[in-house]
Image 1 (tube, rainbow, N blue to C red):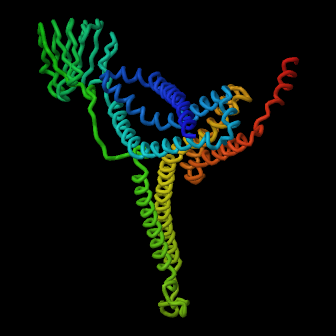
Image 2: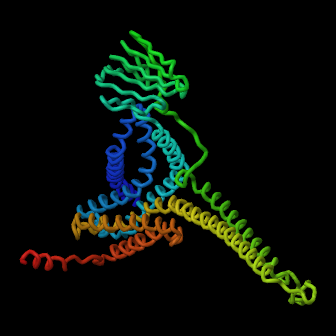
Image 3: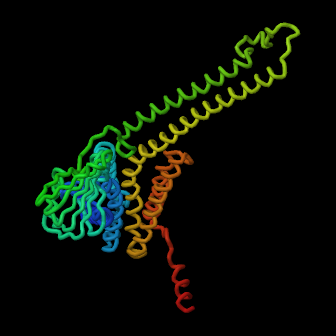
Length: 464
């Protein structure tokens, strides 16, 4: 049995690595097609772009690992079934449960490893990725001048050129006009026949060298002091904000940037805040009720309120209407206060629901490694009877069902239509139950899927 178990595990290693690499490559290519153009257009260093993709690999691993387990089981057990190795093993009196058990043990170890990864490594990678994305979005693209179009990306500076000749690390321009609005007291315009523009991306400084030009200055408050200066050469140094990528730090973490222990602490604090808000509503209601029904504070033995008004006292109509208006305003204020408190409570509950979803997700997705073994093993063995295409199609169907339940459940749980536990574990429960059913029926050599009924339908369809 030891030799057989080693052989079965060895048969899964190659397909697992192949499946993991293919799935990871697909996700990375998707990132390349959707994000690489934007990253390059912002003039980011190659190391920053490389860091962006490395940080994204963290969440790709969390999703690709269970998918690779499913592919490995399908390919390995399918090949063993096609080579009649499964038949030989069963003929030797070895139960299929013993064939599947070593893969289940490996899947359980992968599940534990992925749980550790999701709680300790993935949140930190997501946090660093979120900070990097925020810094990238703040960074301005490199200077891009177009002839005849005013460049307005520099604060208080408008730049217009008639022609641009791009050279390495330099732009040769002709017909330059610069409107300098850095001093609100002076309207300054610079005109030059030609010039050179260099941008030092390491420092964020743009150096403009102008040739054969004029400077026109008009003080706003003293228009009669108009000044005109000619120059053969003039050098301007302008700081371009946000052209250099500035790395920032932040203690704030989103839902997917926290471990399960962090989110449980936040859920606990939110529940305490909800309790405080409920106590606040209770105090407001009791204070308001006692004000108009003082007898609610008296003992049960004297429930009747005694009037302190002198005998024969009566309200005038004006006094009565004034008192009613005052009470209506007080009731409206109370309604606004309680509604505001209730809205805060709903926000806390919604936040707790989202946090609970993320907590359960950190465990439900790793558990899919075990679920996919239960599905992949019998489907791979059945591939001999139904063909690899049928086995792959059925496995794809189960995979789509699993992720549909996971994504749909998360959406429903975030909107508080469904319990976070049910939302995140219903896919494992359903697919896992189907896997157990398939394993039992495969062991008993029962025909789980009879596809013979499809042939007459296809024949009739071809004749028609």
